[in-house]
Image (tube, rainbow over all chains, first blue to last red; front, side, top):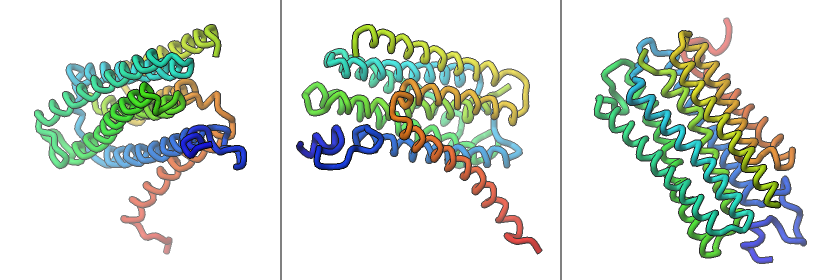
Length: 208
Length: 102
């Protein structure tokens, strides 16, 4: 058994069985995901404390365009999770072309999401929001908004690059169906984080 | 995996996808209903946890892995997140109060 095979499916017959009966790569991805979940948790807790402690926290998000934009972004990202799932299932069934097609649809949806996100950022910046200043109230609003949504956007862009590399590698035979599944896990995690970012960052700060 | 099993799996994936979308829509409706920030935070967090649970169990297939993996990952993560809530609060309090009673 080669080093690559050991990394792919666990350990060889002469070694102990892989923990939790899953490939080592998959376990590493799960461990990365929980550590990343805690990172986002820390940021959201920090934001929660700042928001709670501030008497003039801004509530700038209008239904049109901000919340509508967020609704579209949410729809796009959740749909991309479904397309990723279909891509993984296709790869597990040995349908290489189907797997690549659905993975690239996921990548496309990720790029659409990033574009919508940047549009939202540009409109905020246009209204005068920076990391340390905004025209409405507590100066920490911009730092919270840009750091949390920025970290999420970085994850989306990282996922887009990773899925592209894995899909091309899968097409060339460098990566296997298990690799598609592992990066699928990462993509679903990015989707799950967004489910917490939307209500806490956007919906708690809508203009009424 | 047989063709029929794959079709059934896809069907359940689509059902979970629709439920997650419906919950996301419900959050937006709730955001425009009257209520305090505290009430809204609890409602949003509750719904987001349901969405995340569905995603972890059905999209990430943690439900289909060995139970020991789930028990190794979930309680530890929840514990760290809850402790963060305690320690951060204490760290703010301790700046303004004496660290020990007189």
